[in-house]
Image 1 (spheres, helix red, strand yellow):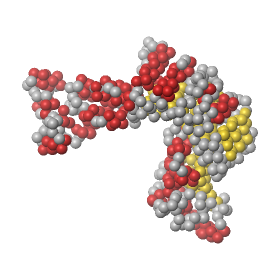
Image 2 (tube, rainbow, N blue to C red):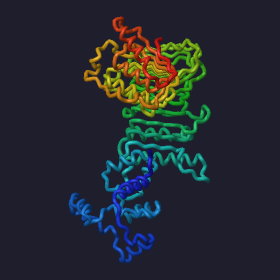
Image 3 (cartoon, rainbow, N blue to C red):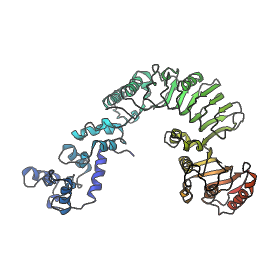
Length: 532
């Protein structure tokens, strides 16, 4: 949640003042002007003179306050009987001290890092102490849609004025930036403003993550992203998010070996341009494509040996070719009409449906092999999947996951992705790994963790129409997970088990476990439990 700087100060004062109640003196019954006149005339002592002696140690000053020999400095904060504006004016005028300004720079920066950049810059007028604090925040956020509008100002002039201020703020910031978000008017698509911003952010500020959004997209031809070659190839730029643009060429992406994350949202382009953009970014680990391709059905080619997460949302594709040996998370949103050729080479994915030849309409699906990730240090795909940038997860209806329930870390990953979706209107397919493991063996090399069995899994709000459990062998961990889904009312329609891959010697135990699950009290009385 974002707060304005002065509301942060008021919140700080309220918390502190609630801890101490002071006797009301007679002067408090006077008006603000009368009290100020007493102080100026010398008939009433200014309470600032009662502050603890700064020459004393911190412990000694605290003892004075606790003993009552010195008044706590909270008493010199603005009188709560005054209006909010009057109290804020006291702080700005310097007639009252705000204790928050005494905090170290690092803490002040932490306060401002979650505040809108426009408000953070305004803190410069609070006092000399605050003047340059905003210049050290790690992220900048600009939204031209929220800029102040003057009735007599033409939209083009207003847009140019705000764009110039954005460039000034970027230039005045100290050091490097972790990230910058700019939501701008479409007017900036027709001048050099976008390129000026990008050069400032990459060449001067070495920004790691950059997000550019065209707020008011216009018909095709008016949202062109026209940039110089190699614009996005700065070695410090690792993540790039673009929204509501039209790409005519791929020049800006030349030699983008630096990019690890690329998200193209609501982007219009021809097939050859998009294929060139993807080929120019060989280091990508996360690629999200929500694109509007030209109506001539053509090939979409993705060949990347580093890719871990891929999301495709598009139409009018005659053939998908995906070659990604490390791909573990694959999501797509496509309207299948029976004329699409799906070629996916991703050996780490356990299940890839052959939808291309089927006329099944729109399908929003995701395949996720959790098992590979827990053993690797680089889990960027997992982190991105449960972040707010993976908004496509909210549209997934059919989810297939491969998981080793003997591994606590993998179970927590499963919980996180299910909670991120919260509801599946289609089905959830869980493929169990390591079905031949002994019950006392942990696949992460340590003692088995059973805490997850004591919790609501994945959450009290999660629900799904149908659950399929593949490679179910009835082990204690698998049984515990299945029983949670049944008794909590998580599953609305069907709970189905596939046991064909279970060794013959384990079949009797497996069938006994399923029979026991059928007898459990159901959270949904209409739930059907069986085999498939």
